[in-house]
Length: 108
Image 1 (tube, helix red, strand yellow):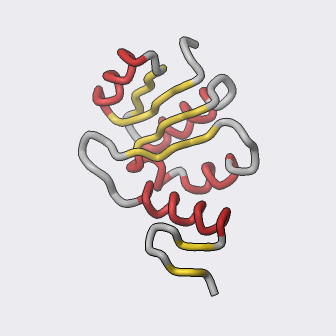
Image 2 (tube, rainbow, N blue to C red):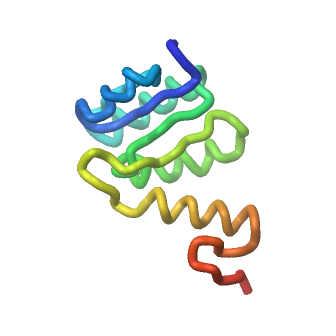
Image 3 (cartoon, rainbow, N blue to C red):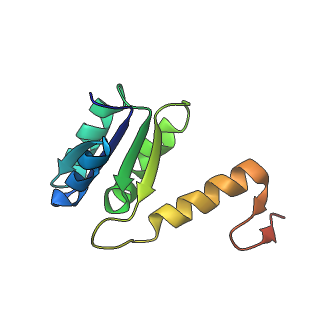
């Protein structure tokens, strides 16, 4: 393990993160990403996960929210975003603050 940071994504796009000292793992599909996430969660504090996999692993990510570490951060892939990362960020901010800070609406 080179750092407390890791990234899991599709293809070679994640390998660029190695230059910044981030442990990079490539997955061919969501099942492989799930296996990798479970393994690297033991040794890393922050894990970036491309949102194409994050959407499919939502059940696992919800369980991982129960613990303070690792923090799993969905990010867009090199192919773009499917909206999952923004959706989850909005949910977590509403949960923590009771206010929709992204769209400026209060919960009722």
